[in-house]
Image 1 (tube, rainbow over the protein chains, first blue to last red):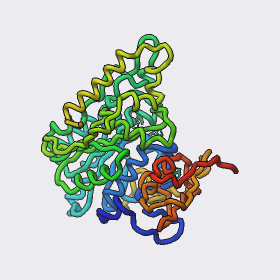
Image 2: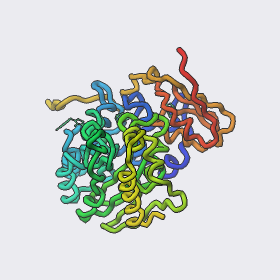
Image 3: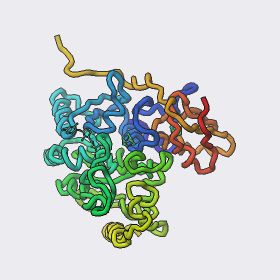
Length: 314
Length: 85
Ligand SMILES: Cc1ncc(C[n+]2csc(CCOP(=O)(O)OP(=O)(O)O)c2C)c(N)n1
Ligand code: SF4
Ligand code: SF4
Ligand SMILES: [Mg+2]
């Protein structure tokens, strides 16, 4: 693993000109949209894990933008699984390394988007957690199937407009609230579950390092804004991610052996839910002229309120 | 003879693709009030900011002009300007 202090707090001095301050393990040249939160999330996760890491990545933006043949942005052993089975492929990598006696001092990460994790890949994820593999699963939650054109997933938030949950005369958008996937992961009696966000990069990297220091299956869900699907300016990625936390809509916490052990308090910095919603086109219908959305907005405030109570955020 | 299954690529070979051509705006680092916090280095989704000792710059070969660095700089030492080619 890389030196814990240098990469999160202060990056090491560059060696020669035009060499990035940090030689990130996710190289430049990838085709992620300008301002992509998922690219930023993966960049941070990989650097926290370090070069001795095997990575299996599910189909989705992360895989597509990083590996247009014959190029690859990854600077570590990396494999593209199918859409649904990065957890199973990583399980096989672990079994193989153990059989070869090469499983010491290496990390194994399985990763995917929210669709690949919460919906189509949930069976393989559950199997991986149940079998007790020494693997970290990272879910990059951009709250829809972005790579195929913004279809809703089990992690799409309430009332968000997507191409399969359109807003209009008969609909306010997505009818369901986010599936509680961290709780589902924790219900497998695994040692470590955490939520994180690119809005707080140092916290994300610290959680990846902590997870990798623990033996057994681990699950981290990273909230990653998608300027294209959420419809916000590309420079707003970090700000939108922070607002999600400060409104209480995305609680940031750690669970160890099934118990919540740490939460990111929002305290006096708490913001009204509308501040988060208004900066994103996917919620614009709630504020359109003549839209009588007060009842809907109240439901969203209640979701934030429930998170705040449940995790003691203020 | 062992044969590879599927396809494989060289690590980091995506650098062959210069994404700088995507820009419509570009960040200009003013080198005036920088406090060496390196927040820009951490938050750039493309990881292409180079330099040291309060003199940082983006690698314009790859910078997509997203503007995150300028927005997050706590002392406003990065300005976005229209890209002119
Ligand atoms: C079995 C299968 N079904 C559908 C697809 C098409 N497909 C590719 S990427 C994708 C969406 C990925 O969404 P998500 O996992 O949330 O990742 P994101 O692109 O949002 O990062 C879909 C539906 C596929 N590749 N394989
Ligand atoms: S569509 Fe969204 S997740 Fe996909 S590359 Fe673009 S910004 Fe990133
Ligand atoms: S504008 Fe975006 S891509 Fe360019 S240096 Fe700043 S953060 Fe990086
Ligand atoms: Mg997604």
